[in-house]
Image (cartoon, rainbow, N blue to C red; front, side, top):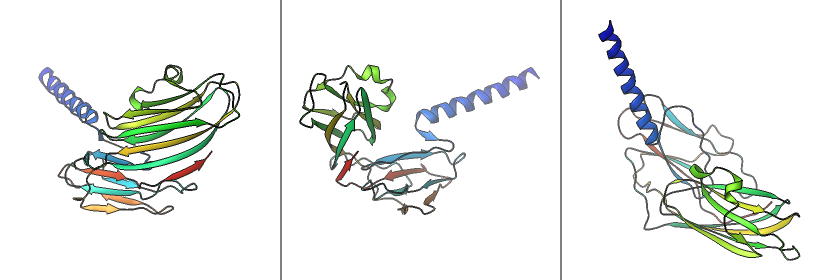
Length: 236
């Protein structure tokens, strides 16, 4: 009995280690929801023992939002097109209430670059500066830590080279005691995955049931979630 119990413990421990290692490698084992903004090219890996398919649905667009959502299914992990980055831009006019901040999230692959130019509309006092921060999701702890980042007096820019594929938060903080209107120009040089060898490709329509890629039992079982590149102007 003791030997049998020891064997069971060893087997359970081995399974736990395998699951932990797979999770660290980026595999998905159950229901997970991912949001794709403009210019997204996100690798999705799933274990077919726990996940049968990957479904993508397109939300109703608000104004001139991101478009061109495509789900690719591949037999092996694709390479990154790091020598041919895709460049796109986005402009926003934002009203920031006093002592507040707003943030936007973008998924960026390693090798990408992001630049944010900010300008405060005339007529606004510059007693206290604005602050712009680009933070990786894994290191997003709290706004109080972000406030140590460089400030913007009237106009300014923040640039960041991406060394790790992840979600990145762009935050603009108004440290004034009055509302402030700012114009933001985002310029992103995004490194995308090479999906030319995909065995499955589907683009969902807003309001439809979406696209479903059924995972084969054998192979790498990977997919790439991609969205279109387009110049966007948003007034908030």
